[in-house]
Length: 287
Ligand SMILES: C[S@@+](CC[C@H](N)C(=O)[O-])C[C@H]1O[C@@H](n2cnc3c(N)ncnc32)[C@H](O)[C@@H]1O
Image (tube, rainbow, N blue to C red):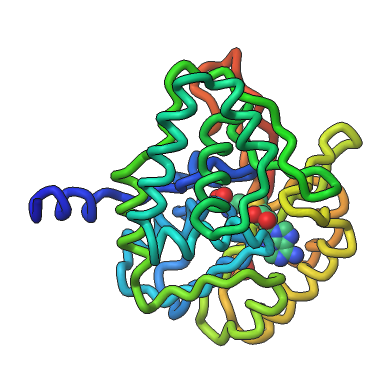
């Protein structure tokens, strides 16, 4: 038993949900630009947490302030940290019921609106593992409206990973909050490292997907974020931002143009060239 637990806790934790804009596949390139030395880590647009998990596996005692405006997502992190066993049992029940009649069960769970914490979180993880494209997307009324995905055998309960995630999140050094990015960033100080991965500014009228939460992220929000970037820069923080290579973003960050890196995501997103849907995005740094 001890041996099994040891194996689980030495697993590299990975995101427990697939998240729109998730950075797992870009980690090989993003990690090249993470500063060598810094004090505290800030990630105020946490999403699936790919970068957080990567960093804390490398530096287990890293002090981190992570947050997101999506309250059910943050509730999921807190539940996995504090109550992973109960969550696994509930997910196992979802899995059993799903395989009896996938379509009927999926839509039944999609329509329900649980009030209790474990049921809310297990619903999010269950829908994320079984919905079309595995993407969390709510409509303007805050309703999850994605149809069922075409999976033969979805892995609804990834127990090893949930335990590994729970283990790393139990570190007293990690603060997890549901809040707007500006609130979280007030705590950042000189020599801290801040990674900003906001909903991307659309590059064309067809690519206007920004609704991870109820409220979309407007150009005003991108401007607010730029002001925050400047503030952090003048405090002496090391700041790295991901965004689309859109005119608006290039204009906003023009004073940092010497430190803009273009990333062609084709190289990272899909090894099968026929399925590639990549595009060019940018990283802006102040160091
Ligand atoms: C591109 S995703 C982050 C993806 C993440 N890096 C990953 O690897 O999964 C953007 C995130 O910003 C969050 N968000 C949107 N508006 C926000 C705000 N005003 N403050 C903080 N988080 C916000 C969304 O809920 C979403 O999870």
